[in-house]
Length: 182
Image (cartoon, rainbow, N blue to C red; front, top):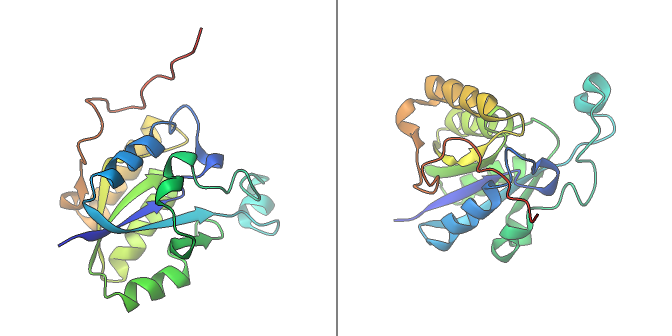
């Protein structure tokens, strides 16, 4: 039996030196055809959000930063993209979708392990849906320490047995170095 895969916020605005490898890893994960259906969230920052008002951070408020990563384009269906304003966790549309499809377990991958992935995994758990966080298919824009901190909090709150390695890390704990063309 296959379970769904929820790809959290793997969008251009969150791709940096610490997360650049995640879109390709998730594409390889999808190509394995182990998970179905493939669902996506994307973060859209609004002008009146706490990020803008309290943190003076106004990125990810429009395209191209809100577009899902190009490596995932072949797998995206518009009816399976669930937009969310900020760190809200599960968008209500997604909660309804999961309920309508009687989802009991779901794999989770994406960006940021210490923020949106964490919040969504904990919300899924609170909904009675078992989240399986694929640790090597997650990363944090703030780097390895933030990623590991997110995993530590998830381990405590949803159970360490729900943190799993998808086998795509190629032996690396941190992001692989970006290779320059020069």
